[in-house]
Image 1: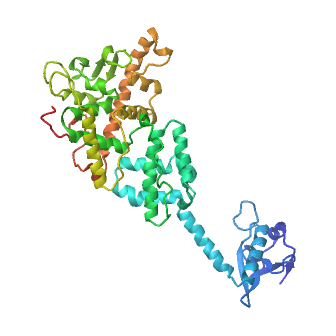
Image 2: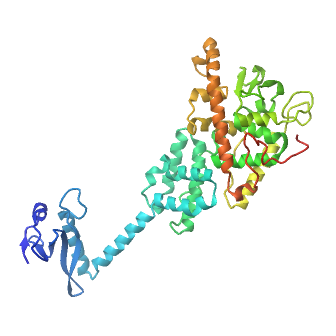
Image 3: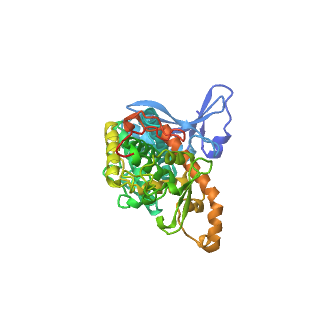
Length: 446
């Protein structure tokens, strides 16, 4: 058996034998060596006694180039020393390596990313709506949790979760942090049920944006839920709440809508012209109506002589927003409980306006100045004086396209729906040609 002073260069220059294989023993560490096969493959090994018997243990393929897989000479020598020490203690290094290999495979199989994909396949995709799929994918594979991709799920700590949520709050997305926590809680609870971890890192974590009620934004599945809940309300509030979402205008503005403010409902450019005495900033505001919004407005019955679209008496606008909202919340809560889902985070009617603004920006890519114009926000010198009049006219077509894109997005969300257990209803989704789908008639409210 030839002996050789093993160096990285010497190992790389070893020629394959004419037949069989040849072992070269290291002069610096006699029990350690390298085997060269007929094909030229070089593998490190170590000879040692295990429980009184001489055994040959293969360490692994030798690395002869920087980009080659395998062991460097230095790493192979260190591994040989470790194995000789284990063998002297009566421990079989091969069993240790098998255990380590199994642990590595388990670690690779239980990373946040791989378990997340398994959660999607086994839990989300077979049970939940398409819009919900997107929300979970955004939570599990989006930029906020990207750093966790290769971490084992059982190594993610409460501090890790809190750091991500705090970062979202700091950049002004408290509502998004609440939504992320809700989805992560469901995921980590599922992991615990699968015995992948003992205590979910989201356990007992409170929504970081809980005190920032003014920053709540509904998710796509939540939009589908509230839309269907609006439909079961029936009457004036059914249509009023839907127009709050579709137009993004303030509650008092939509609730006090008059027939005299609506123009072109029978044409292809319908609009709602809110006079200055009914807007918060005292400026008249034109809201282009998407086909779905126009169809809802046009479908309202005319009651009394006061000209209000949403009225029970025919003399004054509807009242009782809070009680109606409580009924809607109750329906959603019962459906979620029946489906075994967590309660929907607290939301307000004003959050419908914020949801439209946020999703126009983030989902639809509409320019911020157009979104501001859609909700009658006044900011910047470009909207002052004569320039303001010019820009108002210039933005009108941009706003019409924005409202139509938003209404189309809402229609898509509602069409995809929510899980059967969540909705508790098989009512057809609303469309521009059938805006009253899913609506329950309430004679006292029409």
